[in-house]
Image (cartoon, rainbow, N blue to C red; front, side):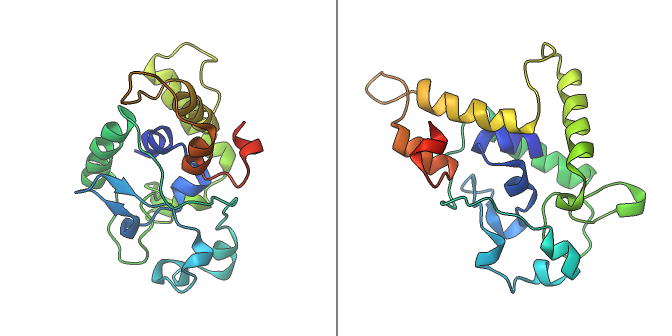
Length: 181
């Protein structure tokens, strides 16, 4: 579910890991990406220790919305349903969607995990998928794929492909057009 969401939205892995259940509208098929500083008194943040709150990061995404693309958005919602049934541990402590499901850390927000361990999990998932080695280097490559797709291959109503750079900038949450380019 996590990696499908990153591919569907083009968000950074850190942004995806900080999604709360409040941010997801399954019926509408939307997910908001909200800077934790915009809701500092949210009960999920208050449930964290001060050190854990310091681990909440936001690189400067300028927009809460992102254009979710297929087939990844469909994969995300299907995987989210399976995640809820088989892995998610309801506990009432916080509303972070992605959490540990390992005994010693059951229920802790997954954003607290080390990037190196998340990258290893991602590499293992890529190997299991059967993709050619080296095609996908890490979760951030999903963001690059998303931007490239929007810029060059997104189908338009007039039969052409690709969205204007400024719109791709907005969808990716970049503060400057230079970052998008």
